[in-house]
Image (tube, rainbow, N blue to C red; front, side, top):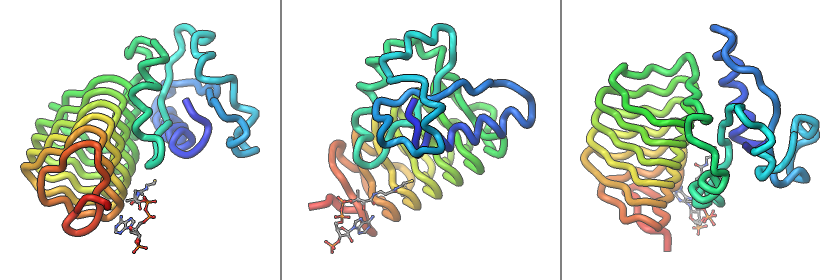
Length: 206
Ligand SMILES: CC(C)(COP(=O)(O)OP(=O)(O)OC[C@H]1O[C@@H](n2cnc3c(N)ncnc32)[C@H](O)[C@@H]1OP(=O)(O)O)[C@@H](O)C(=O)NCCC(=O)NCCS
C-alpha cells in the first residue's frame, strides 16, 4: 500500500527475506496518487487502495505514514476492511528480536532493529532501521518509530504516534496517542497525546 517512501523500503526487506528462503512474491503497489509516484515505479502500480478487494487471498503491507499524514493511518487501514491475517509481520533478517516478543499483525521491522525482552507490539507498527527497543515496552497500533531512535525500558507508547529519527526516550514514561516527537528529541517525561514535541528536553511545539 503506497508506491513511494516507506513502501519501497518494505520491498527491500521482502527481497532480503526471500534471499534467505523464498517466502513472498511481489505483485505490485496500490496507490491513490499515481502522479506523485516516481517514473521508476509507476508501471508497478496496479490500482488505488479501493481496488484492494480485487486481490482476494493476497497479502498486503502498509507503507503509508510520514510526519504530515501519520494520523490518518488508523482510519485508512480500518477502511480497507481486510482481516489483519492478510497483513504479515515483515521482519528484516538482520533484526535481533528476543523470542518472547508479543506481536500482532502488519508490523514492519527494518534492518538492524534490536528488540529486548517482554516487549509487546500491537498491529501496523513500523519500526525503521537501527531502532533499539529495550525491555518491558508496549507499542500500540499504527505507530511509526524512525531510524536510530532509542526506547529505554518500561515505556508505553500510544496509538498512531510518529517518533522522529534519532530520538531518545527515558525509561518509565508514557507517550499518549497521536504524539509527534521531532527528530533528535530527548524525551524525559510523560507526553500528553495529540501534540508535537521536540528538543532536549522535549517540549510542546508552540
Ligand atoms: C518537529 C517537526 C515535525 C517540526 O516540523 P515543522 O512543523 O515543519 O516545523 P519547522 O520545520 O517549521 O520548524 C519550526 C522551528 O522548530 C525548529 N525545529 C524543527 N524540528 C526540530 C527538531 N526536531 N529539533 C529542534 N528544533 C527543531 C526549526 O529549526 C524551526 O526553528 P526556528 O523557528 O527557530 O527557525 C519536524 O522538524 C521533525 O522533526 N520531523 C520528524 C522528521 C523525521 O524524523 N523524519 C524521518 C523521515 S524518514
